[in-house]
Image (cartoon, rainbow, N blue to C red):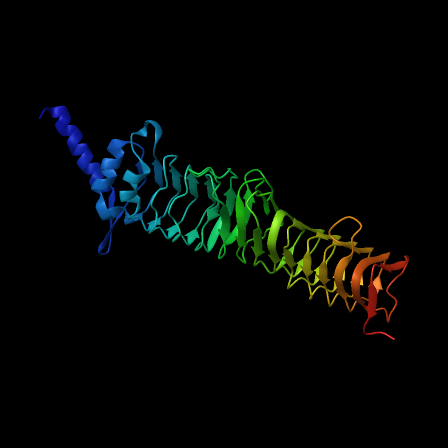
Amino acid sequence: MNMKKLIALLIAIVALSCSKKSRGDDVSFDGTLTINNISSLDEAISFGNQVSTLTGNLTVTTGGSTGISSTLVSQVTALITSVEGNVTISTPDGGLNLSRLTSVSGNYSITGVDATDDALATVGGNIELNYPGGYDMPNLTSAGDIDLTPIETQSSKSGVNNPGKINFPMADASSMSTNGDPDGTLNFGTQSITDFNFGPGIKIINVFSESPVRPTRVVSSFSGDLPSLSINILDADQISFHANSVSGDLSITSGGDGSVELPNLETINGNATMNVPKITANNLTSITGHLNISTNTVSMTKLNTVGGNIDVKGTTENSNANTVNFENLTNVGGELNIQAIEVSQNTGQPHNSGGSSHNSGGSSHNSGGN
């Protein structure tokens, strides 16, 4: 062996020794682990279980000119349980195995194909996800900003788009949005998404989806105040938001045979517009602006005050709603126009200042008054 090769070997041995850090009986990889070609992959494999805890960053690039695949790299990444730095993954050739990863102290970025990362619970920094299909992190409990990039779902061999879901049922995050949109806004256009599920710590104020795969479910467990709420879904079987108040306007639109459930909502300090077959908001007491509803059935049994106009009709042009239950409605600041087959409202007290009252298309039942 010539002198140059001997010196190079000694340097490599010293570098490898410095990359190991003792933690009691454990040995962790100290520093950044980068895998982007054959030689770096071979080196990473040689570390064995030492990669289970990384004190630095994890950076992986596969496919293309790298000469390595996500499958080959997965024999290393499948051992990793925690990363104290950032995780940056780009694997256009296939999903990476991160099945044992539970915590990342820095940022977390996945590009190309979804990784196997369902065990991931905490991310100290931001999350960026950018690959075809849905975004599903079922055990994530905390993160910074979550940024999602809408990409059309790749077709299966049969030519049928495989539907995805946006699933963060346990997450508490600083914000969530689609790339380039304001915090709390998710715009998935015609991407094939059939399920939106948000945990109690994520504030969602705007969801737009015209998914060709129907129907769709949208559920948010956030129970605080929303500055506004706008939901526009082509065909939903369930839209359920648990916020207790909306400081601005509320707008919900969906076709199909779906329902809107607002079980905790008490006040809307703006206008309320809903176009959906069934609406239930039995804790809602007041709306400061106008109330416009196109529906078959609406139940707002505690609604007492609407500051503006009330306009209720059926879901199609010139049609009547079937059932309208405003049994405690006593104060309406503008015009009252309800076109329904069956109406329950409290007219025992003045309910109309500055406008006219008109019920058409059916019978009117007055409860709670003289």
